[in-house]
Image 1 (cartoon, one colour):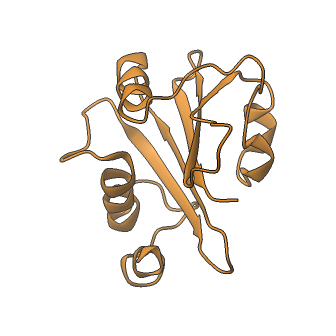
Image 2 (cartoon, rainbow, N blue to C red):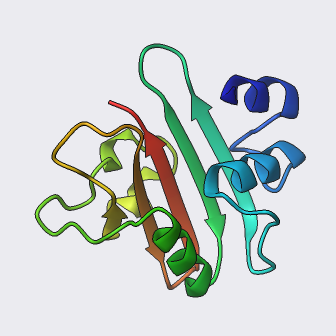
Image 3 (tube, one colour):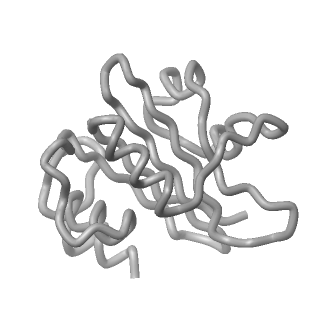
Length: 131
């Protein structure tokens, strides 16, 4: 299904706010419409093989960050900091400096989600993946 977004709708990490990126954002993050504070949406998707990775990078206010975190029940997992960080391919240097939220569970429960936010530049990084 996500191959359709990549191929036909043109999700592209190098073309912010394209139609494909905006559509992928709404579908992945469960929004009917994109909040007015969201901009610079960049997406990447890899569904080749047995596992998958979906990445979204965008600017938003902390209220939108909190709304998305609540939608996916993401928490600060102090015992497993930055779960999934090694899978995020884009803008990795900034993510390495941030504390992230995740929905890590002891039992296998795919997909997993991780989310990082930099309040200084309002940049958010969302990762959905399987293992």
